[in-house]
Image (cartoon, rainbow, N blue to C red):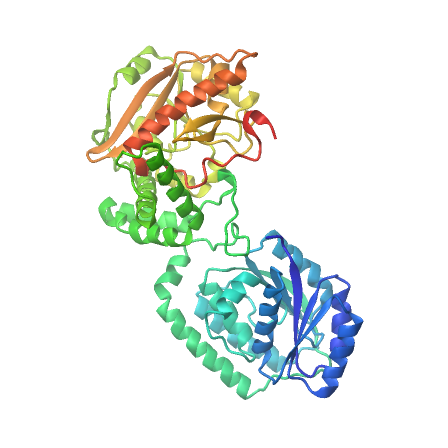
Length: 574
């Protein structure tokens, strides 16, 4: 849905200030929803005149009786969403807030549509000291209720909500309708994993300003609200603690509860560096078997919160079953998605164990070692094409420990920096034979040529396209449908002029099984028939990848729509 913001202004008897407030906001060209919360007749007349003056821009809503600021804001948010707007900028009617900051809020929301944008007040000397210091008590309680300092100011009446996020909450939870509304909606949105961004904004208090804050009863209501929220925090404590080591989810959300379809390398690496490091520490202190138990609740969390990955997994198993209707393949659904994600987590855990020296050569066996042994004995370098299938990294760790072959991984580490940094901390040799690339251009080919000439085995994957791929893609049939495959491996093999092998490392009952097979003695790409040759090599690779996917269906770790056409067309056409 197209980004479409509006402004919501709750008002109760601010007849002297509302005209200037609307005038200062109107210059930004945004539509208004002014919600009259049962104001007196004089204020109603002012609002009626403003509705005529700003006809077409201002929508006037009137609540029959005064229900409180929260009731007015919720009515405005619901009306805005019903009218088709995606975001609503809430601002108080009393003119305290700096209307010139509206573009900053809008641009922040446009850049991160799933986030709640909060004003962080910057006060001048006009602020009443009692109210200034009193706010900090609420701030502390909010930090306790969220176990976080993310919400810097929960009482500022200048904020911007993603409407789907806010309305889904107010339609499912009974929120307070008075001054405590501003506090409670933020805490509950935080509990629902919303992201927050703060913008400093100037706040002034007019000497003759009208305040509807009831010192006694509004403080009672706020105290009652904090009591509810503290008990709610205690009930949610295990999940809130888990969230401390997991990123909040706004970067991929479009604000409407959906995740944007993206290229795989644009999908943010999930999981925090701290969380991964804690697993590494647990593995070191308590061993693999105990630490592996933590993978189940972690995977369950990512299963529940990762809808895009869940759907991609189901799509994969659906295609796997359709391509072999009489085969023994997993059925798409929550269980298969859980097992799929668990296998991925276990693979990462095994990588960590391998680099920590907790996996030995006896745990990894070749199905047929003859091709690998002959290559190593020859002293020649080669290009080895693998996939995000099984555990390619585990073999490199064992090779480094045994020093029986020079194995260099060509990786797109800008997509998984957190996890790779944890592996590097587990073994200082991790980065020694790690080559990061962003494409397969001429400079990359020259660098790789030196390594192949020195007898190294360059291991790359054939089922992903680098973020800035210069070689584009070519189409091949994979699991019954056309899918885009990277041209890079075959263009690189042509440039290097070296032997090419396929390599897969699958987890089986008795450990890891290595499959190392010749692919081509040399790959040539004649200029006139270049496209046809690329398609033929990609198809040959796709056939072997499909074979091993059937052999280990839960071990192909592509949690995005692999069959979706990239923005660049096949063979580089747009």
